[in-house]
Length: 275
Image (cartoon, rainbow, N blue to C red):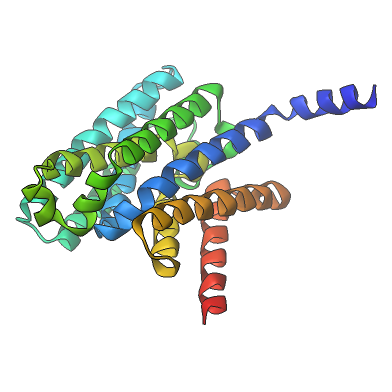
């Protein structure tokens, strides 16, 4: 009877279960994709995409105020993908310096998003939750999305692993082997953008970039070999994300900020112990 009672008490806090499942899915996805982003030096491109998400989110929340969360997701995703594809195209062409593109996307997209959202009469406090993450906003739809995106990313990377390795370390050799570098380039931006939009509620638009960068930096710093890098990047993301979730629940702090700070702390400690 006590077991049944405890089980009933547990299900009363189903948001913790949602947060746990969402965190695990996000950790696997970011852990797998992070080495590619870091190795290709697209870290700040991810930051530009994540900040442009605020514009799409503001448009969705302002003009589709009574719409379902599915509509909010797809509107935000479509708008963000449009800017991400522009960013991917300019990065491929290299007509503009990367730092200039990043500066434009950081300032203009956030400014537009904040201005548009300022016209929203009610729910002004919602923006803070989307900026820094709030596990209380997670729904079953969000968990299904995170799990689906995570599975797609893992499958995409593992099935075409050798092509991704060539894409990262030897683009010229990849072209000689007939690997479609342009396709992989745009595919990386698409899955990165989709993951960022999906992780808004859990990690926030501002802090999700940290989760995309630190696992790859940790693995590339401490391990050699392409397979080792991807494996330990995923393990780092999984362990630190679970630690961050526990800390956020214990301290009652924003989930995105706690996850980011936990990963940074563990990474810093690893550097100290390495020395």
